[in-house]
Length: 115
Image 1 (cartoon, rainbow, N blue to C red):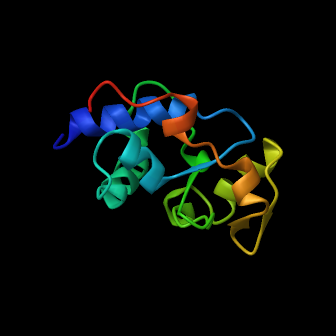
Image 2 (tube, helix red, strand yellow):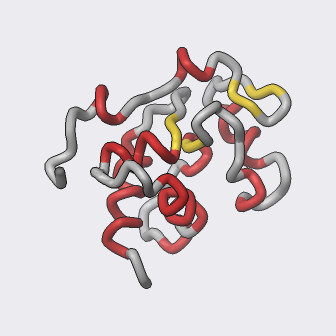
């Protein structure tokens, strides 16, 4: 698979997001030292079914808290249902209290050793 190393790194970061918290594609890209690769992080999330270990892709949203990846889940409401099962409130496809629930890997994990 092309970009497999980057995808693996993205999945590893996504697995560290605590239940009840969310992050953005751009925050993961920045943490991995590729701040302009937010779209590639999205592709990694879309491909996470290929991972041997589960990836909580529902916890990764766009920069304003929109569930922009929901079309890649089985069923139109699965992403929202998974988030709500973790205590994250969603209204109109957007995370309520996004700033409060935002998990910033740069802060939470420190700067990645890849940089």
